[in-house]
Image 1 (cartoon, rainbow, N blue to C red):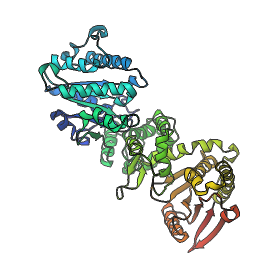
Image 2: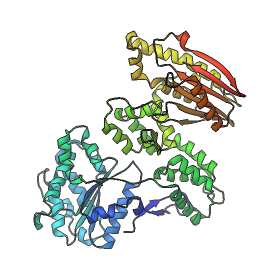
Image 3: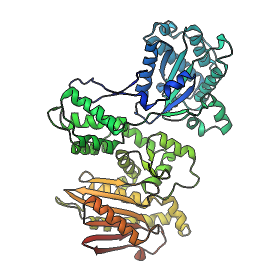
Image 4: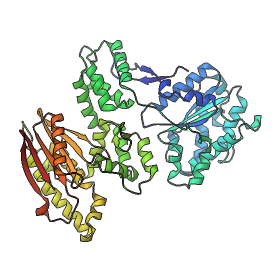
Length: 536
């Protein structure tokens, strides 16, 4: 099979031009799965190329002629909770895609005017797929895209019918069923079922997919593949793309396909106005990344909506504040769900450290989780410690100390004196999220914030850039490391940021500690380097 993966940079000489990469190396096991008559799951984050992949795969199967392949999207089933309505809708969708197939053999099996034979909802899909397989002269392969739009009783009925057809498919010629079937979406089948069904029921319904290679995920682009795609743009338009642009695109996106595409669109269309005589350099990519971070594109709206889900927030908040570990009692299903959404990755050197999937998501996630706090801050804070040349970072952080004292006092009043550490444990992330919000409100639109955080790092590194100046901050929870270690880490971060001045913010989680013993601001000079230590 000669599968390809589509890539488009809008605004080229031909706006409909698509740049292509071979896609089969990205998912090398899929051909063997079909040959082995397996039922499998293909999942990956939103806009990672799943639909393009399976449509191309289905077209190539049909072109080869050994089997028939049918693509069917279940996207319109989101929110349908009635089993009868959902099964009727799935049958109608299957019929719709039969009518739209380029193969006459599939067209001929479509029912005119959607006059599908009546049957109970519990056998509607199994009967229809059996009808197709019995009347085709070759085996059928079916791809159900957006399968995770189904939920609740419709999902259970659909999976039960797939299971029954799978189990009976070799009993006789009259019980034929698809040779291979794939459910395509953002999540694994057990994740669909985990929240509402006991383990035994989940295992029974997922039985057709109980194979070692059941979880198949489309990988992100490699740096070389990004270079290949961008060079195709150069070949088509003559527009030079510097090596630094490819390197920065890899840095910002980690190869996430939608982000790779969107960076290119942002530069070619918005920055350079389709002027193909102008070079694309790394600085163009950095500017485009900042534009994406602050955009209201539907992709980021969807990401922000996910972050509002309690089970996603439970996983993401400890990561955003670089906590030592995830909370006790957090379910594996919640963690798996967040990974399946494409929000996280594991550190290559230590798989117990969880990182944001890429620097663009890193910033969008941090802003989103502190969004509610930022909205509650007074608008008078905006750019209060900034002028046309620099930021008064020390003044800003002293003001933050006062604001945090007021916030923590309100928290203590609500939780009671006896709460102490337990009160903070439920709000342990709050001080860092308040700092994020405070910084964002003060410098919003006037400076760039770069954050580095990960579960297990025990620190958050923040570098604010403004008018050519760099302001490195390191944020710690008091007690995890000695002050000497904290200063040493900050000095290393200052060196990376190219600054001789840095700020160490140490947050004390003891809400009942007397504030005069808790709030302090001191300055040290070490080998010509200025270290400001802010305790709060």
